[in-house]
Length: 126
Length: 108
Image (cartoon, chains in turn yellow, cyan):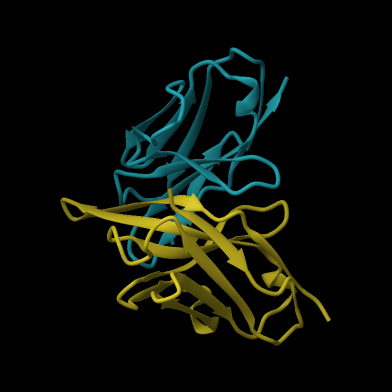
């Protein structure tokens, strides 16, 4: 079964760029017509979708973060990555990667995230 | 922006209770949404997608229903392992993806 694992620095200085990688195991990132998403959760708060990528390289970003986010994919390594620039303390959160199934039925879009990585805590502090 | 409002935000219940969580959308864009369960320190786990389809491996005591702007997650008989926080989530366009604020289910 497919498993996802986030990796990257746990501490990032303000104004710098947060960089995380999600490694997919147990299956090819290129198979099954899936998107691959990043989601974050500040401590004690709810979930916020950051953005997604398809293995073709096509991306969608949350408009509230779009100016600072870049998601990329490396199919040869079965990985996808997140870069978030100009970080502040407000970007401190647990960051999750997840497989993202998007379906269109009768012009209606819906999706679900499954599975998820275990999450990695990124703290923005000097 | 479309908002998803979950109610209640906190619920105290006993083992064996029937529990219902509601998720209301500020606009009726999609007839489908997903429900997730999150335990402390763990990643969310998919329970239900497309409003009422049970994810493989999820116990049948979980069920989902609804359409338009009101959706519900029901646990028919609450078990000790069900004490967790539950989130609804909806995709309204490729750019507008929203999570509800969460419902924490605790032991009475």
